[in-house]
Structure formats: C-alpha cells, structure tokens
Image 1 (tube, rainbow, N blue to C red):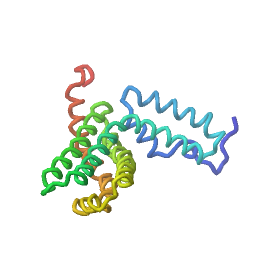
Image 2: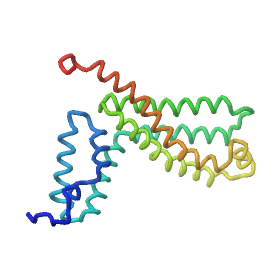
Image 3: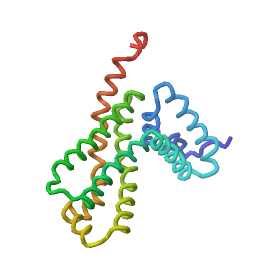
Image 4: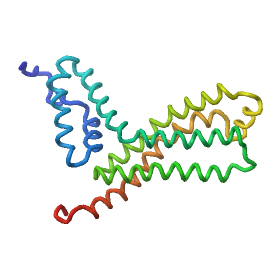
Length: 209
C-alpha cells in the first residue's frame, strides 16, 4: 500500500465530516458503527484509489443521500401531494374564502414534519437525524410539486383557470412555496424529534437505562 504523501493529512483520506455526521445520525445506534464503518472501508480501499478524492467524496455523499431518501421519500411525496392537491382545488374549485383551506393545508404540512421528525428520532435517538429528515422532505417535495404544477398548467391554461390562479396567490407563490418550506420544515421536524427522542429514552428497556 502506498504511504500518504507528506502534504496529505489523515483528514484527506476520509469523506466530508458533515456527510459522516448525517450518515451516522440517520442510522439506528445498533447500525451506526457497522454501516458507517463498512462504507468508510469501501471509500478508502476501493472508491478513493479509483476515483480520486473529489470523486470519492461525491460517491460517499450519494450513499448518504440514498439513506436519507429511503427514510423520507414517502413523507416528501405526501407533502407534495398535499400542496399540489390544495393548488388543484383552488384552481378548479375556487372558494369564496381561502381561510379554511389555508388552515387545513398549513396544519397538515406541519403535522407531516412533526410526525416524521418524531419517528426518525425515536428510531435513531438523534435530533440531527430529525432536522436532516425535515430538510430532505422539503427537498424531495419541491421538485415533485413544481413539476406537478407545470403539468396542470400545460393541460389547463384557459382564462378562467388563470384568473383562479391569480386569486389564490399567483404563479410566484405556486413555485416559491415549496422552497420556503425547507427551513421551517427542518425546524418542525427537529421539534418533533425532541418528543420522539424523549419517548425513545422513556420506553427503552430498563437494563439499558
């Protein structure tokens, strides 16, 4: 094995710290050491020699993204469906007052983030995992919702529909709202994570307390 050059620090033989932290946070305590250790071994022994430092980092971040995707894609799809469904109702069945629909949509989205954050923290005992999951939900939901809105616009773009869109907030709100949910979603998931982590500690076996 070729020894590292003098200008290379041990840190250069590891993936980004934040990616390692997110990976370990997304795993259960029982799996954190094994899974992260296996990935690090593949990173050092196989991927880095063949792809270089940058390519290996991209590979490792992709692996971490895969764990985040598998943990949150259902929640992201639910959020996108909720918001897109609200848009469709406002466009095709416009109400006299948007207040009721706004309340339902707002509290529905908040509930998704809170529940997901709580479940993630209950499983992983990690608040960082809850916050990362909340951010991942928003990242997954945003493109789904935007593409869905574009499809609706491509099919229905008559003057009546355009007028209903303007009354409900306009196209700027349609495309910007999913992006504005990223930070609040992470914070809400973190709040849910506090409850989930407390529940995990409360209900764990006595021998582990």
